[in-house]
Image 1 (cartoon, rainbow, N blue to C red):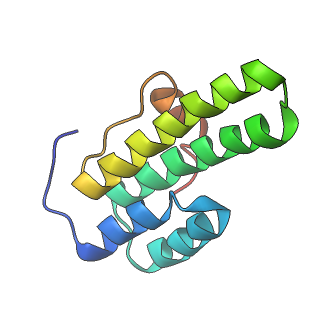
Image 2: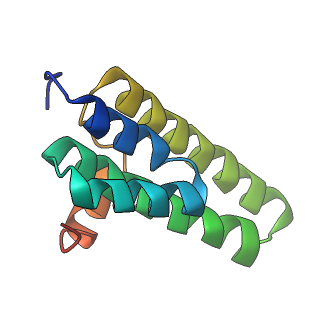
Image 3: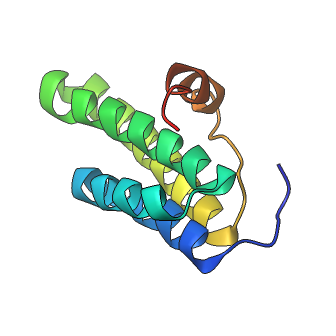
Length: 107
């Protein structure tokens, strides 16, 4: 998707959703009052990245492989965060489309 004119609430929801589990919960609560396609897009992206990051950091603790994956997912998280700040509804590479399909039930 290309950049669009967004409400302040939509952009705040998108940005806050990337700030960990508590940020995601807060963003989802705000989203219930001010729904938008942009906000739900980033809520889904952030949820998927947070779940995968949790798995990597707390479950998969392989010395080198775990750190390499953690770095890769940090880059994906950072990309999603930057897209939210810039007002772009763009999926992160490799897993973004999969995450959108996986969490399409979140509305």
